[in-house]
Image 1: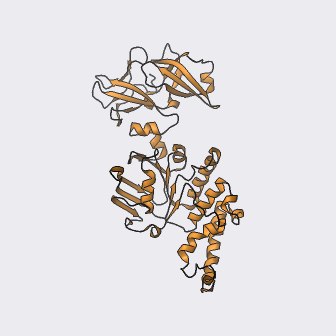
Image 2: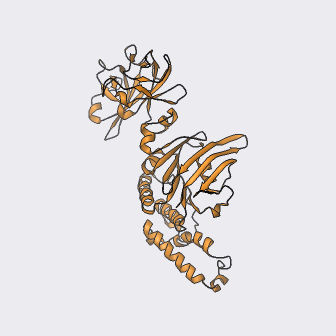
Image 3: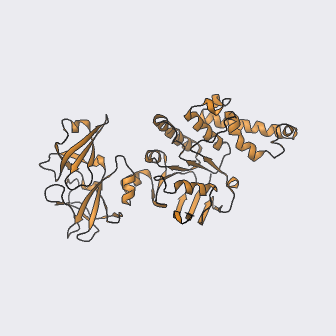
Length: 390
């Protein structure tokens, strides 16, 4: 296995920039996900790493070697596609053997009839079959080796595609949304399978997805891509808890983070105007000039229901979603552009009716503040109380 280094990768399609100076370090044995919405450039970046597309500027290094001018077959990478790309007329065993035949057999040895006369060919084929069966045992698809792709389920085809990539023992695996064609239940199962596989073989994985749940549950680190740039790189918990950009905060999390408009006073304390009783300064301060506009981010699970007579954030219940173990309460707050969503227990929401007045509170430590440009602003003083409510 080898690490992958991307240094200032740029790519344009005509006059349209697709990648803007993308740099990323992927350590050997790491599972890194490129996460972003459709059109952000993540699949283009993956194809550049694989050598299927060429960058206009920058370098791609694999194992410390610059492979920018190296053809795809010589990069020793394995790519798993969204469509699986299995040969429908070949058995599972033959599909998995194909990359080995192309790599280890000469042109004469690959001939259908005359190739059998080549010395050493039988031994090579025996070694290939042994390798295929070894990988099939790892993926638990041994009973499928004699079947053809049309006789397999979606999850079985996914395992075969993975097996075909694994037999070559590549230095890294590149995966382009490989679970997107599966139904919801099977995607959940295959997420566990992929995470277990990564732990088992310890290979380098570069995984492209638009599904934040896939990225959060499988990755060592996540690189969030937006508009052709990597905006933030970090462990899943870091990306979720400490977003450095409001776009990252909104993209990660479901339901997405609540954003509340505020303005700083002379002490740098945010004041929530139009969302309660005349606006109240919070007992915390941020590095912003007086009168600066802020957006305060609070995750749905950090909002709690309270008595409207006591809570400074007051609104009306517009909608509730009963999800069994939890209830999502959509609260329309005066002056808010969109309802705030609180994730609460069913017991906390019991008895609430649509249009009923609702108060909301949260801990000051759960606030994430962003400036007018969407960049994270750090707190410059701690809350006066360890568990203060607003």
